[in-house]
Length: 311
Image 1 (spheres, rainbow, N blue to C red):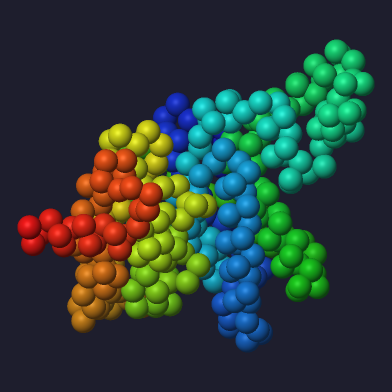
Image 2: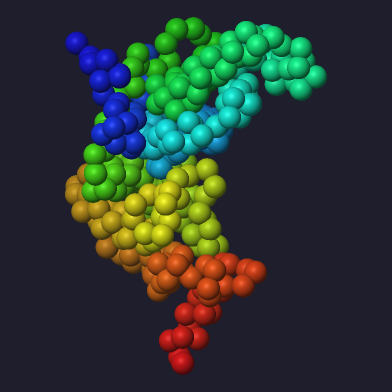
């Protein structure tokens, strides 16, 4: 018998979780259905857009994701403290972007009508907002609003009804930094593992591709949990982007060559291929206030580093 979800997700143990959702009835999330020969590649964008939206609303950060042909992987970070810091107004504003709420919560959000509410009605609104607050940092609600949305779109397109996903998503708690890094790399390497791409940064609709593209212009994707860069940063993944890219490259090369996909030795390390090998990322992060003026970018950091090397 499956264990209750509340026994699998314990924020006292860890805020990081790996979640997997799989399709049923030979359903295809994206790619080409081998039976009907119909392409569902456009559905990848549905998932990515929904992940971005939910990540901007929930107190749950997306650390890594990969959209496969009939399943999805996502690594999530729950920020309970952020949810608890929200005002009643902030909670309702976020929830109302997903659901219409109640008559009272809608009245509360309109200043001219809020003044007409009685004390008892306001107390009721606050109590309702606290229910929403709990949902907005609940992984089960996050996955529910991701999967139900995609299922409705897919069922409409397929002109059918019934389940699109398996009844429950699978979740794994990531209890330390090694587990977190290894799981993120596993997720990012999924397309390469099945032969959909030759290198991680070429893998469409994965977090690794977005991270590398952003890093090349000296940024981090706004909708992904950032790497901390140094111990001075309170929030963020607890390791450096540079180290993570090296890990992904190393693990990608260890995938057996007799399997569908792996990083061939003809490819240079990912940091060389993307032009990020020689950047002092920790120094760049720690020196944001002391070494940069009004502009911060990878190109400025490269020029500064070259000047220091030739000095």
